[in-house]
Amino acid sequence: MTPSFQPQPEHRFTFGLWTVGNIGRDPFGEPTRKPLSSVEIVHLLADVGAYGVNFHDNDLVPIDATPAERASIVTKFKQALADTGLVVPMATTNLFTDPAFKDGAFTSNDPKVRAYALQKTMQAIDLGVELGAQIYVFWGGREGVETDAAKNPLAAMQRNREAMNFLCDYALDQGYGLKFALEPKPNEPRGDMYNATIGHMLAFIETLDHPEMVGVNPEVAHEHMAGLNFLHGVAQAWDAGKLFHIDLNDQAFGRYDQDFRFGAVNLKSAFFLVKFLEDVGYSGSRHFDAHAYRSEDLAGVKDFARGCMRTYLILKEKAAQWNADSEIQSLVAEINGDDGSTDAFKGAYSPSKAAALKAASFDRQALGARGLPYERLDQLTVEVLLGVR
Ligand code: GLT
Ligand code: MN
Ligand code: MN
Image (cartoon, rainbow, N blue to C red; front, side, top):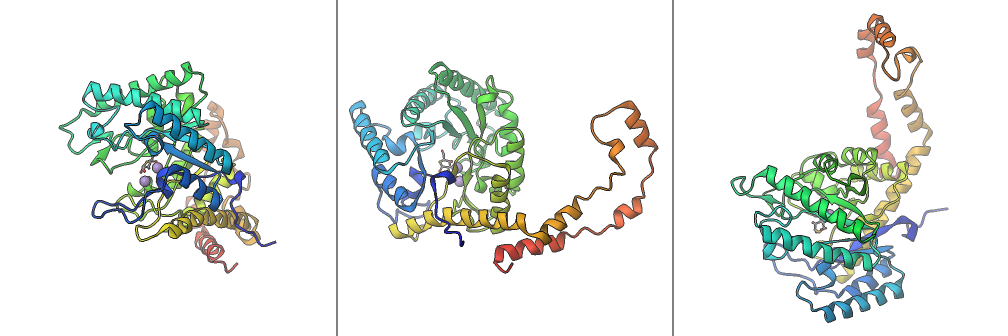
């Protein structure tokens, strides 16, 4: 049977209100698309086959809304969810748009800004939980500097920790059962942002009071902006039990924050990422944190959203093909071959093992002379991707 590449709820494909809702503004140009209401976005996402919709507090409820306005917006949004069957797996706080956050939220030098950021986040957590969110994302968009004269990086780290500890305790105190997912990014909008990569964030999490409820939300584009191998960071997060959420998109290395459609730039990296997520059985949201090219109209926004999901599903099918390809698998077996001659040295340390290993002899020249068939394996991978196998 030819696969249909039709998104299904079990694929856990989600989009943010801000992604398909992006109006095509950039630092050099005015919007190219009309804003959509959150209800319209829910219907658009249902139309293209998404499973869920995520939001920042202010994507849904304007920052200056009255309690009555909030209530009416939430009622309409809940109705749209009920009408379409879409769910809200994740929510987050906008701590970057308002000028109050121009020098950061949790890491601001101003204690009033820090307190306001905590207040806003608690209210946003309440909103997210009310709509069903189980994962709460923290992207520190303004947590950084343009000059290190402005902020002590150690103080920033401590303030960030204090805020996360406070908010973990808040969520626990409310009995929310939330998990927090921290999203690293190296720069943009700040000159440099704290906890710049997946690795920084994983280390930071271990210093918190409740590390068990905090994981990461890595984004393809953000690690690529730092010139890093995204898959390796994701594998490390998975190994640590910290892959709570993932932001899929694409990005040319070394460029500004492009947030392109998933698979739009680095297809081979996208392939190995999808293969990894599927092979290990990642069961969280596949969240597309990206937006349509500024040149698109509403139909193009749908093409963008469908393209993200379709590319993921095609790559998932290619990964299954790679795993089932006998020539590829025999190369994999050859690469990982083991004649058992080092069995005595494997596993945990013991003094006798160490002594035996120190006394063993190895044919170093033969080890160095052995050819590794990675060229053939990579070419076969390319041919799977190009559809000629
Ligand atoms: C913003 C940012 C993203 C974050 C979102 C969550 S908003 O668009 O570029 O990477 O995931 O705050
Ligand atoms: Mn991004
Ligand atoms: Mn993101």
